[in-house]
Length: 287
Image (cartoon, rainbow, N blue to C red; front, side):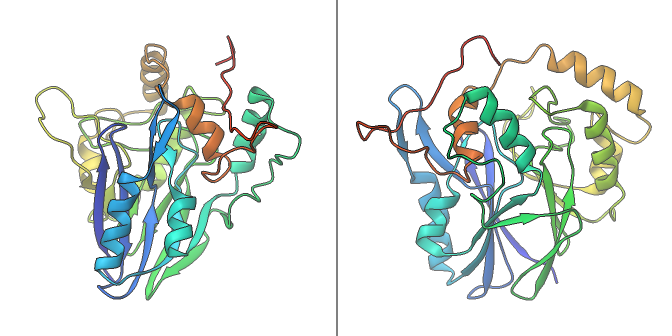
């Protein structure tokens, strides 16, 4: 069965969220929803998530899942907000526990924060199956960008998170804690082995010079033949050399510090302190 896919672009972080559904009036999953955040003021908002909410209500959809491809470093997750409004289960890969362990130490988080994945409703393992109404989804573990990255193959639609970008934009960085470029190369090969006609939906698009607008959908065939970083014929050694050199020139994402602290908690805020105010930490000379 071919699922319907509706994309939503968050301009601030150049992130695409998706609603995947079997039919109007049927069942749906939300993938990688974004919560608005103004770093300077510390204010959160839900304008972007409300666009998703409105689409789901207008189309009479029942939300079964809210799927995270990984703990994002460039935007805050709106998963708990949408779950409160719509129901559904928040899911991520089981290796989120590795990511939680890394950042629990880096941020010196409160003792009550346990790096066991219990903040999420479901932890997927590689090869797990799930359903959105009558459509079957399959979980593909694709580490490299982070240890916990997943791709979701839902019918003929593949949601790759940050593992792949549009063919003219390449692949994800691998220099975050727990990332590894050789591992990413092998993960990409798993995806490129899927059928040519598989639709590929990216989580981010950074249009290169000469392309005026954002794009979000491509195919496995296009990735295999035209991805500028990892097209057919590029060896693992060549990719690792390119990726590591490129990563050394990249700045940290603007929202990495607040994003990671919330997203390893399934999008929830940390506990308020004794004055009733919630604070996020800024480690000095650590990242």
